[in-house]
Amino acid sequence: MHYDHLDYKTIDRIKSKVGKVVIGLGVGAHFERWGFAKENIIELDWNEIVDLTNGCSITAKTGRHFSGRTTRRNNTLWISFILKTPTSNLYLGGDSGYDTHFKQIVDAYGPFDLAILECGQYNEYWKYIHMMPEETAQAAIDLKATKLLPVHWAKFALSLHAWDEPIERVTNAANEKSLQILSPMIGEELLLTGTNDFREWWKKVR
Image (cartoon, rainbow, N blue to C red):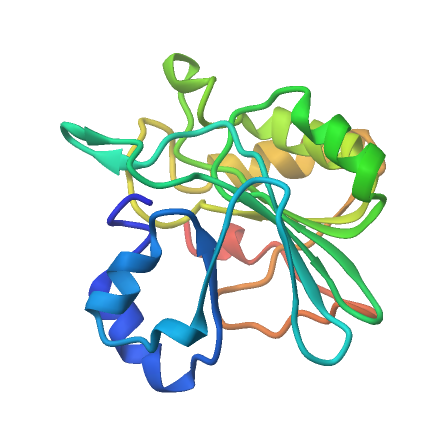
């Protein structure tokens, strides 16, 4: 993982609230060093599945990205997750460029009630590792997702676009495709089943 996705201070603050940790191969060593019990750390390779309690399971799938920063690259596995609960089928994409893997995943595991996909910090030069907003909407369509939750925007300024450009572009693209998009404010409750009525809050903070 990148250090900005696996931040020690953040992990340490939520440590007491965490039961099992499900991660990609190679990431477990960090959690062990940070004091997590080894028996609570589950490392998965692509296509591996772990059954959790109460009828839930997590499957690890591919993602088109890389791990590491500076000169240390790809010592850990970059993955996406499929989270199945008794009532929902969720796709958690992580960072990924757009490619055929979304259609391959839906053929085996879809359709999905909700797709959580990255949308932000993009650039044409990085198109193989980060999706443009229109590709985020298309990926949700590929996944046959009922709802799309765009993430990875309105945070770190790593690219050259305006902070609210991603949500504007992905919302427009979703509307054109009749795709339901969810845009909660940070900390706002999101219902997996039921009705969410989120406003375009970002237009009020420009």
